[in-house]
Image 1 (tube, one colour):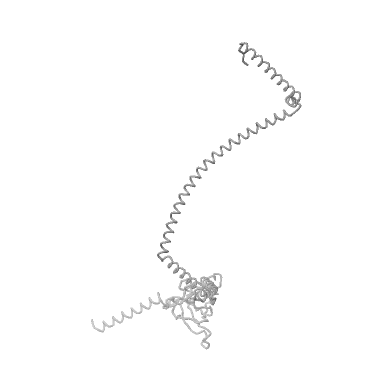
Image 2: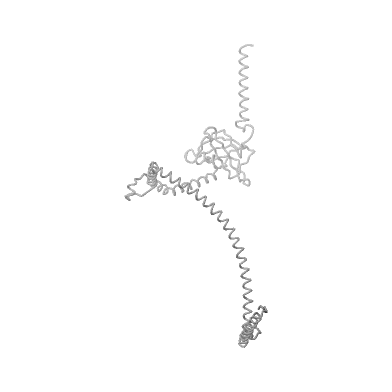
Length: 338
């Protein structure tokens, strides 16, 4: 094969490759308007825009609906008027009135920003005209809004405000604490030239510990302390023995108390019986003192008393006579005993 023919084939193959590559770019990553009709939509970015160029995809709820066609000043004579971004929207999609556009820059700082048309809550709105006169507003999404939702930002702002308020409230406390922890001399405090604080308290406590260490470290004091502890141990042991004796005495006291309880119970019964006897004797004495009864008449009749005395005298005389008769019988040899 001739060299010229070889070069021609290579050139045709390269040209075909470029054409195929261009078609693939148009179909999968570039302008799809080659095979579909579009209409223009004007977006006003009053605060300017960053990172947006022609040929970037535009989405609605994550679905591609068109691409940017042109980025320019809204009024070239007044650059402060904002930036116009012309979006070519595929004719198969209607954008409702009230829609807005947001541009979110890449958080990592590289790559193209995402361009999104916001249509939330506009299901009942009329579609924008397709004659290229429709204008909607756009804005750049702050980086902080991409990282934290607005409601969370409000929560954080409230939390920071509370922390600031707490810090302001703690400032007097911190000042007082600083005054309490300042290094001060005990002599100045004793002379009332300064107010005692934790520093002076620690110094006094350190002195007390040093003095106590000196007292305890003295050999004689240590010996006395050992003897005192030994005596305390002996006293403790004796106290335990005394408590055991008191415990046994308490048990004996419980038994004695039980016996005393029984004795008191028996005495109570005896007292009740004696009370009954005394009651009966009282009734008898009352009956005897009553002059209307037989016993009362007999005890209160003087004649009965006189008769008893007379009878006794007579019985004594009879006995004397009988004794005299017995003596006579005894002299006569008749043994009679009275």
